[in-house]
Length: 226
Image 1 (cartoon, one colour):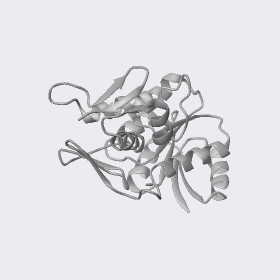
Image 2 (cartoon, helix red, strand yellow):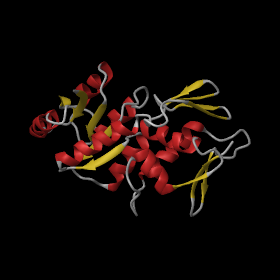
Image 3 (cartoon, one colour):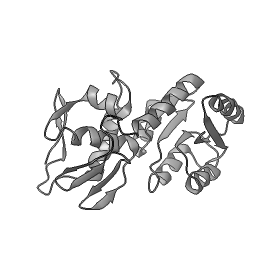
Image 4 (cartoon, helix red, strand yellow):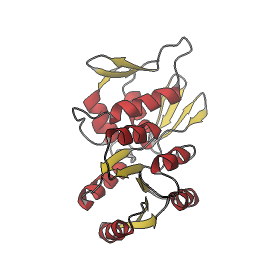
């Protein structure tokens, strides 16, 4: 069974999802308020976290901000409102995916499986270490270093970096990045890829002369330069 934590104050929904996910070989642990959810996430190891935005005691965005200081577990955000500002803030703070409530349990399972599948190395390539300048990336465990200092990257950020580092000096189009790193085609108004790349740029910083490490090539995609 794959351990998953859900932090949501809707206890009826949590029980429904617990039963549904059990049939899909997920073991669901539930917390129903912000502080207990944050404590559970810190105290235990989960394959993925499902996090609601609206919670008593501490909202989901606050929890996400705290978690991403030390925890890079794949995280899916839920919101009953589904407002763009919630989605954008969640992605900026390091959520890997976003789903509006009410949601179909089958779609939730599909999103969870996609999150977990994306973090696994390809059976064809296995695990290897990529290097580009002062950057290193272990493609198996998605751990990255810059000047031998570890980078705290989310799964999505690490997968974007992997897609770029396997094509050094080449422009990678947005659809390719979205499919390889986010596991989905890029929609017309989908800003998730932009948010993840913005976060990754901030963590990598610019080259010493000020040139961005990840360059935007207008109308084409992104390039990771030396």
